[in-house]
Length: 116
Image 1 (cartoon, one colour):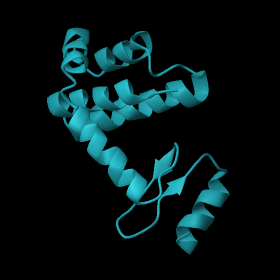
Image 2 (image 1 turned 30 degrees about the vertical axis):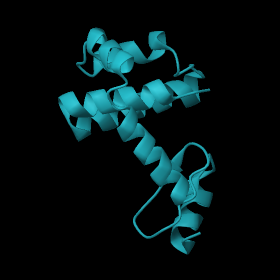
Image 3 (image 1 turned 135 degrees about the vertical axis):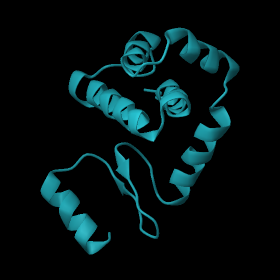
Image 4 (image 1 turned 60 degrees about the vertical axis):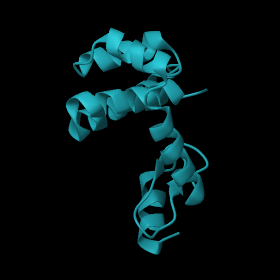
């Protein structure tokens, strides 16, 4: 599964609507992937989510065709690799290792409290 288009679309949303709406877009994409088993590499999945965020499908398609946000996405993928991100979901904070992978909430809390 390649989520590259989802990541680039999130940057389109961020550029046009700001961080708050980009966060809401990412949340909806995550829900589609993890609960509906949607293929987030497909335009038919991502475009309706972008449109619900107030972004025209044509704006997303143009950004994809131009690879407008590829350098941005490349940079944060590399930054993630540097701190140990090897999969999704992944959460990170400054000066701490990333917490990677699905886990029960109790395990997540344990890892956060023990900085592992």
